[in-house]
Length: 476
Image (cartoon, rainbow, N blue to C red):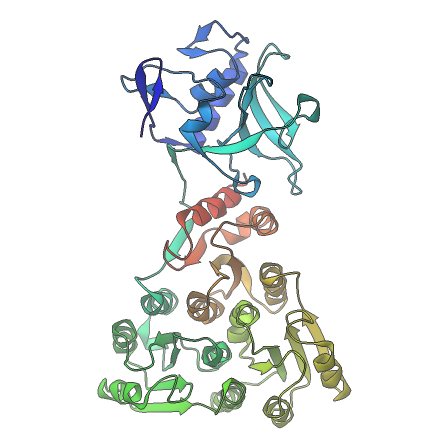
């Protein structure tokens, strides 16, 4: 919908953030003087004229137009502070009692997001300038400043690649295809239900032991995406994680009709037993391949999925089991498996609300070395787990990003990342956008990351998340 300005309809023309900043910088370099009545290159030489020029606002006929501060927000959409990217606007609309002002946001000065680079046409400075400014604007100027995004912005997504399908099953197959391009390298596929998360949580370590992907299916029939990927890979075995209630016997029969010689099920009476069976099979597979189990295991809550998702890449890369605990106790089957496998080192993932102090105390009392990796929430825990992964040999190169609000995409992404060459870490992010702490991590390590992998479709992780990752990778 157009905005009526001086009898003409203003239109939203597409423009990149680079162009917005180049246009802002040009006026600063030229030192265009401030004036509320004079025009330069068709734009009024005041604050809103400066923003209008930077955004290249025009009327329907193509003539430059300079809306006032009370109408300029209509050319954009309100955003939060954490969503600000270079080229956005910070504005206070003029009212009967308050003078208005508008500036172009040029990027954060510090990781605390206290100061930003401000492009503006300033009356007090007498013209265009660039300076470090406290967010949202100088306290002496009063309150009422808010961030907006121009509706005509064309986002830069160039430093990310999206790995996705139409649903969770095709996304899992896409993750497999991206990480296992050479089908001849895959002898075993791990298959789990995509309808719930507990059984698949431990699949990453097993996938690492057999050096194969994790595919997802529904409970009653083999999905077309899983079928197609199994046919492409032509594995000698498919290991199905979960009981018949999770993946029916009919699914196993379907796999056999594809010519797969061996189809085995690893399923217990509950999630804790299934995780234990998977852990035991993991060690058997390592030994059969002539590889050594390093006697380390991850323990996560069996009540929630986020912590186990974060650890999936390193679990796969190091072929370490993921075992499940209750918040207040370690189930007997988990304790027994730790003893049977001779585990000497336990890494608890998650805070005490997820895996309580009594669980840790019990593990330590058994003579094991116990450490905890935890953050204030699932996203800070994810960053901490990624740091742990780096110490275990993973890389930030082509790091992965998946939503932390649901489980399917990260279930498949974790093993695919851990078994990539080089193995890469996974960061969980909110669909609402990249939080400031993760943004700083990406920005600081942009050279090491290079191109990021985003798992899941736009309905799961919107394009704006990709835009923010790209902005961080550009050092903005």
